Length: 171
Image 1: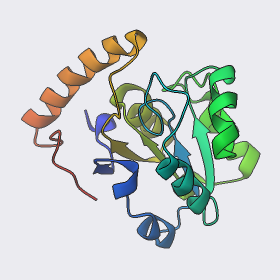
Image 2: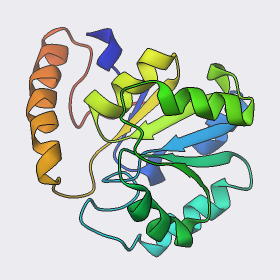
Image 3: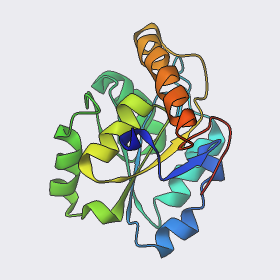
């Protein structure tokens, strides 16, 4: 069950202490797209998110790693203007390995920020990458509902082992 425990848990991407991450040697921020940066049904990110990514891109290499299609990522990323990897099939390792190869980062220099245990947290864990969980921004797409059902079971098991409690944020 420890492979589902994020290193950090915050309410939103705005609550993350990026200065501390930088101080601790993090050079690359991998962001999930849907329900982490943008509501699952939206093609228009909030201006606060756009400004945050522009600011972060000055201190870190910011990359979106998403299970979404290339078409969706291209349209949204025209506003972010960061690197991205589409159709990642997280928790599979394929695109995580590509990031490491393409940008020459070590696993210790990367953090993955996302809203799902089964895709984001498990994917980061499988690669040995530090993970940060944030609460989802909106209701999920139909294809994500099964993941959320399984996630509820995972959260219950983690709670019984005193490893994780939803809504109890930590750094």
